[in-house]
Length: 169
Image 1 (cartoon, rainbow, N blue to C red):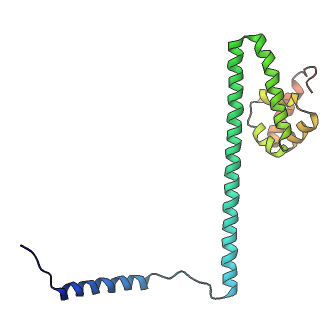
Image 2: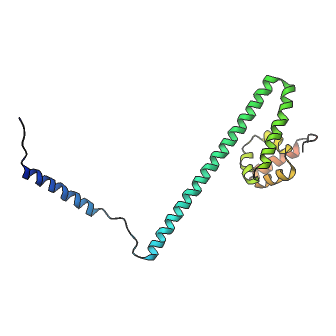
Image 3: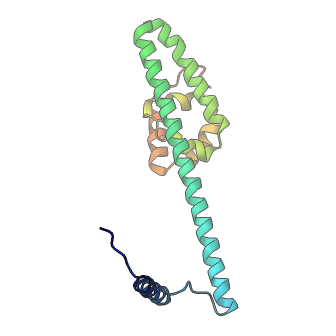
């Protein structure tokens, strides 16, 4: 059994639905457009500020990722060095350790002090001390100046306490 819907009823129903749709569209406010040049200028300034803020946030996120990656890489190298120390025995480990700290010192000296200080502060104090001993005094001083006061004081106290190795710099 088939049901036949008269064309007039179907047309009336569609007209009713269209009327409801038009009423809803008319009820929703249209996006506001500024009525003056001042309003347009304010809107453009806000849009520019939002784009700049998003750009700064993206740059900060990238820096944070770089710091995390550097810290993870340094930590992995340190753990690998410690693992090599336990496997190779004390004589071989002592020969390899100074080279790794010398390499780290040259890496941190090549970096800009402000950027190096952020990563350097995340390291263990023992590693900071050994790397700082291998660095040039000027580079160490510039990096200490860029560190937080607490981190710089902690490293300075450790440098003052630890006996200086011969031929460290």
